[in-house]
Image 1: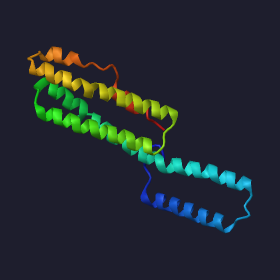
Image 2 (image 1 turned 90 degrees about the vertical axis):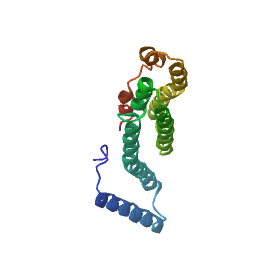
Image 3 (image 1 turned 45 degrees about the vertical axis):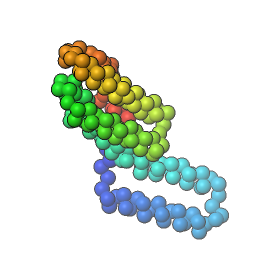
Image 4 (image 1 turned 180 degrees about the horizontal axis):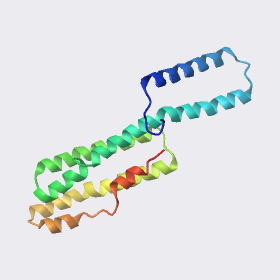
Length: 167
């Protein structure tokens, strides 16, 4: 349930209520020994993960929507095929959204592995984004679609990158 984010509101409410109750009890029992406090810190870390994982899954899903069908790559290819400015505008907005989602994910706290994978995702889309200006110039100079398509080649499978962010 945790890894899929399929937790209903009733379970989340009960969990949060339990957390508050435990915190209140600990404040009322100042004589609790260090072992108990240490275990409580470990439980707090597990709780944090329990609460953060669904948020991270939601952000990854949003990132997939930003880059997937109808998103960044789709609009990039449409620009290569059609050269219309509306696609360039969409690409700029989608890139900004993606970078924002990466930062939002990082703000939740990331492992070293997650940080590496987020950087890979950012690097791939930054290459596309930076390559867009080359495509615009080439398109304006009458370059063929076949040659345009080769101007920005990124050797990463986008969905593979997003699947690396797993729990």
